[in-house]
Image (tube, rainbow, N blue to C red):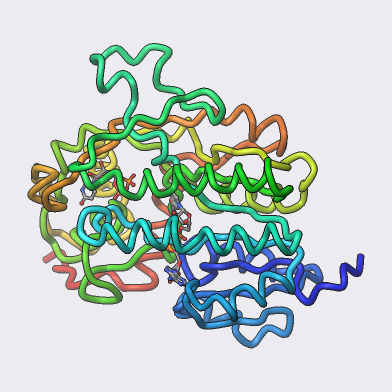
Length: 360
Ligand code: NAD
Ligand code: UDP
C-alpha cells in the first residue's frame, strides 16, 4: 500500500543491541523502506549499503533532522536510551534527559504528524517487588502485570531508580498523548533480552560497567573472578533476542491489536538467580572454550562498592505474558541454556576467547 511516506518505519536508536537485531529481521526480506537514526553505526555496518535503508547519524536532540524523519514515516520505533545500570547513579541527569525529557519532543512530533509510535520502555518500571518490602513470601505477588502491578521505587537518594522513574514518566506522557491528542502507540517492556551484540567489553569497545552477561564474559576471558553483587541473590528472567524480535515484528504487523496497549516481552520460564547464572556461564565457557584450564572464581561484592553510592537493586521480576500471548499470538521458545550459549558463542566469536591458558 502506498502511504505517500518515504519510510515505512524509522528506528530511532537503531545502532544498539535491539535495534541492530530489528534491522536484521526487517531488512532480511520483503520491501520495507527503513530509516535509522543513531549516534553510532558500528553494530549495523552490514546494513549501511542496503538500498532499502537510510541511516542518519545524529543525536535525538537534533530536532530539525529527527522531526523531519518522523514526519516522513508511517511508524517510528523508539529505542534510543541510556540504559546501562552503571549510568543510573553516575550520569543521572543524562539518563533522565535521554529517557524522558529529551524524548518528549519526539513523542509530540509523532502525535502531530499522525505517526504510529512503538516505544521501548523497560521492565524496570516495576521497580521492586511488593514481597521485597513486606517479607520473603513471594507466593502470588511476584508476577508483573502491565495494567495491574504497582510501580515501587526507592527514595530519591537511591539514584538507581532515576532510569525507572524516567521511563515511568515517559510511558505516562505517551499514554496521555494517546488519550488527549490521538497518538497511536504501543509500549514494550523488555525483560533482560540477551544475544549477540549486547553491550560492550570494558577496555575493548566501551568503558564503564556493562550488563551482567558482558561483565561475566569479560571476567571469563580475563580469568578474573565473576563478581556477585550482593551475593547474586537477585533473579532475572532472561529472554533470547530471537524471541524478542519475533514479538517486535508481531507488534509492527498488528497495529489494530496493539493500539494503545502496553506489553511485557519476556520469558518467565527463564528465571535464574545471578549466582546460578554465574555457574551456568562458567559451565558454558568450559564447553565453548575447552582449551581453557584456568579455574573460575566467584566473588561477592556489595552493590554500593560495585556500582557506587545510590545503587539499589530489583530483587525479582517475572513477566506475566498473557497479554502478549493473547494479542500477538506470541510465545517465547528459546530456553535459558540455549539463550546463554547463543549469546556467549557470538561474543567469543566476536571478541575471541581472550588470553586462554592452554591445558598442559
Ligand atoms: P543500547 O544501548 O544497545 O541501544 C541504545 C541506542 O541508543 C544506542 O545505539 C545509542 O547510541 C543510542 N542513543 C543513545 N543516546 C542517543 C542520543 N542522544 N541520540 C541518538 N541515539 C542515542 O540499548 P538496547 O539494549 O538496544 O535497548 C533499546 C531500548 O530497549 C532502550 O530504550 C532500553 O531502555 C530498552 N530496554 C532494553 C532492555 C534489554 O534487555 N536490552 C531491557 C529493558 C529495556
Ligand atoms: N550483577 C552482578 N555482577 C555483575 C553485573 C551485574 O551480580 O558483574 C547483577 C546486578 O546487580 C543485577 C543483575 O546482575 O542484580 C542484573 O544486572 P544487569 O546490569 O544485567 O541489569 P538489570 O537487570 O539490573 O537492569
